[in-house]
Amino acid sequence: MSGQHCLDADSAQWLRTLQGSGPDRDRALARLHALLLRVARSELRRREGRHPVTGPELDDLAHQAADDALVAVIAKLGQFRGESRFTTWAYKFAVLEVSAKLGRHFWQRPATFLGTDQWERLPDRLHLRPDQLAEQADLLAALRQAVEEHLTDRQRRVFTAIVVDGIPLDALVVQLGSNRNAIYKTMFEARRKLRAALVANGYLAGPDGGPAGLDSMRRSS
Amino acid sequence: MTDWPGLEEFLRTDPRDVGCDHALRILHVYVDLVLSEGTGSAARRYPGVAAHLLACGPCSDDYDGLLAAAGQAAGDDHA
Image (cartoon, each protein chain N blue to C red):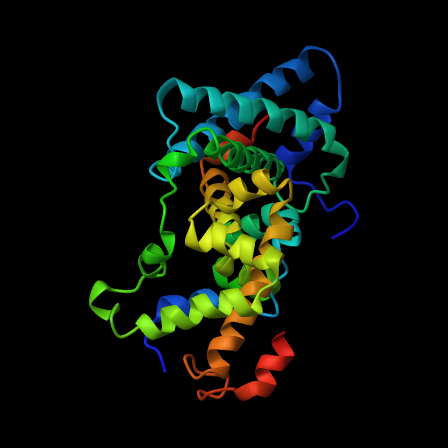
């Protein structure tokens, strides 16, 4: 993924103009901002129903995302290697800015998302039908016990926040002053440990279709 | 054994999963490959990214958004 790839004509034109100066560059910047703003607006609308932002506030957030995306594109222009179309590379900054801004915005109204005994809602979050709830009660209890016994404090905190309390990962990133990759890796290890615990106790099938036993459990801890 | 596929799917981890940083670093390359050669081709070329997008909700959401944006009219490309 290193070195300059052969640029398509449109991407080369974008790069040449943005690296230049004068009115041509100003026009290209304005055009790029308009495109980034359209992407940010579309992205916020596409995610409607999963965030509470509407009306003028949504448009304001779209403008903020487009402004910050344009700054990032210009700052990183030298890193564009032509591995994709220029616009796809640039649009990525707008999409990522929307995600980051929605993560920060979550904490302005967290009460609309959080309840008190969220463990009771876990089956619904993980798509268990209500008529199956009784027969899976033991599994739910085993999962809760595994969370207490097999996860580190950090893993338990992240797992509970995301899976039990339903806090979006990007919002948790803001709360913990972390980044998406670090939180994801913490969750990845937590999932692996919990699965191994449930397999060892016969609640889930192991790789060969049967209980994996204690050896598998030890490997994952 | 349980019959709770949602939980099993959620707890399953793929050792090929490259994580968010790597996936987002090349997301634009992956998206253009999907648009030009199809999802299967992109997944074969970057199996670790495909595994990550299946497991990570936020990155999958970013992928969907970028795919929609990049898939729009080619006329956008002109400076």
